[in-house]
Image (cartoon, rainbow, N blue to C red):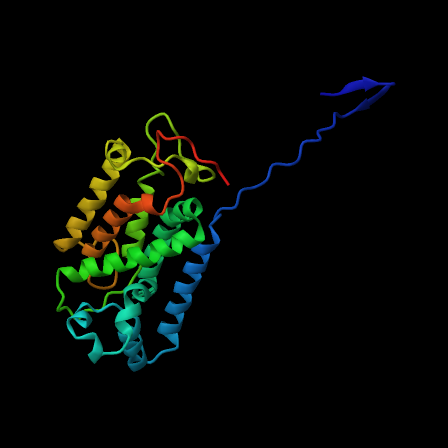
Length: 254
């Protein structure tokens, strides 16, 4: 619309700033760093190592359950770091792509919520819990466990405590990490959380009986590591979360 001012037609001014475009991938730095680290390891192991070197690399940084049946004094120090380092190794492009996509989906909101330091601590502990949960079913196994699937499963469990709000609330990537943390019982009575958890457990049950649906593609799937990781994240997320639970006095947002 135009208006008349002193005999001259002028277009109205719009002083509002142009809308800002939201980036397609707005990931926390720690998620980008972990993804970059895993990709660098994959490229190095796939293209810069001989078969012999790669086998030694897996022995040094992969998780082997049978390692813990041998007295620690009779072996090197690999037992000390492999419960964590295995989570950064992957068996191929499909494996790292799958875990990377789930890491972005569930790791990003958790990282935004608990911060970098707590996220690193969560990663270390959930990685070890997933590994030893897997080993608990067969301590004598010499199969090398690699992949971030256990940690990603723990992040899924953690996200179930806040990223699926009860009816009447809405999740949005820009503020979803600020939603109140639901209690364990409250989360289990949340229809969305319950359906997601049942579907996820059913998928792993199918993997356990021989149907490779998702997870550690390219090799035997450590479905047990997924389950231990998920329940660790779901049950113990409150220990890492500085935000108060739903129903309590709202925490300040910094």
